[in-house]
Image 1: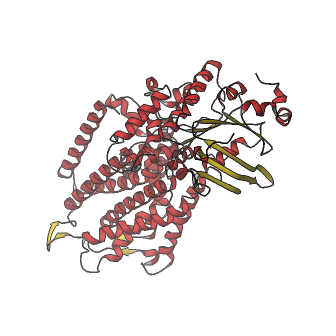
Image 2 (image 1 turned 180 degrees about the vertical axis):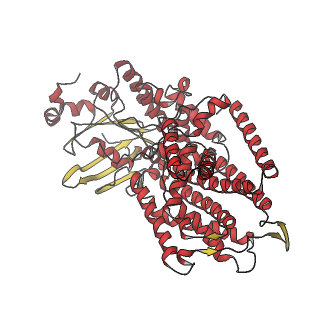
Image 3 (image 1 turned 90 degrees about the vertical axis):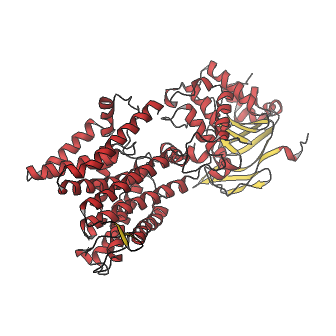
Length: 256
Length: 336
């Protein structure tokens, strides 16, 4: 089955990242399509987080190309990629802990306003920013907790806040680095539902260890080991491949 | 900050301003001059705090911007005539800002302790430039025989040679600096600057050009330090290389720490306390530096958030539960 290439939002070709003698990511190519959740799994040290950092620009690629809707991103710094429409969350919760939840999301929305660094006027003056802030908080289910200082939110709420911040930047592509890390069952349920809703009109790439969540969410699955892609395709096909089973899935039993 | 808070601040501000206006009519001229010196050093401390408290960048070269602007005035002043404030003031501020642009563009590539060291090194370079060369008087400095002139169409508007005239010009500039910093820190720019202080990586990931934001803040801060340096040189009547040295930078940093990192006018209070303390101790004991040092250490230990921690006790205001941070957090350089 071939999709129209116009569905591809983010495309990576032959990405490699070398840390001294270690090849953390080796010749990885993948596409992230609008309306689709693309999950990347693999054992610890497979290079998944490095891959996300390459796509977001937090790390500079050693080789390969990245494009968004056909326009090259490879040499743009992170803030340019963010303005272009690539939003990301971090594995370790990375929020502005001393600011309220509302202020966190408002900053994210401000970053994508027409004049994000105005030097005069109140921060509350931009109607577009206010609306996107309210929408993102509502979508992430945090509107009732908006006035709470971020460090006082529960762990699950902080992860929701991460996603609300990404949403407020009106991204076309969302990169989620282990959004369920360290979460209880109930909290995870809530985030899984939230992530499901993200793919409408957007392309989502997710790195996650929770296999139940991955198979519930993924429309497309890529398996990495030692920095390289060992399988990619529809989740049910990938799951059956012997190489995948021995490299990864076999270790903690066949997932349900 | 709620509406009631803002109203309280406006009232406190107006009371302070009224007190500052009547002060020179109530006290001997010496104390009016002392107050003007406090305003000038407060201006410098508030300028520094834009990058230290609000930007999380501990700079040790603001003395250099301060001194450079003073030298700009000294070199621009004719030997036996007044310099016109209309062009010497912008010149001095622009010179300080331009040097801040160059130093900032290089130093802001580093973080944390390295930033402190690089700014210290640049500051000392400028100090030795004036100390070891003769083009600006070398280690003896330059006398400024005449104060700048505030004139329009050939008529003097304010006489800066008179302590009262000088006092009110400095007070006016001080109010303007406070207004400028307040607008800046409450603006989207100010919020982005604070966000970069708290989490540089995330701020960049949201799409903010962190380097440009910090460089802009650094240049504004350097230019305002120059503004203070211009009036300091005019008041003292001479400039010496020590004005650019790290000792000034460090003293101003102490004012910032005493006053409180997260406020706008806190450093002004810090300047008032530090200079007032010096004034009182100098008159009472030979060992004033020792006593001063001990008092400062106690102050910083007892009030890590600065003197503004005392505010709730006098104004009935709710404290903001934000711990003061003395040094910026090093950037998350790791990768998963």
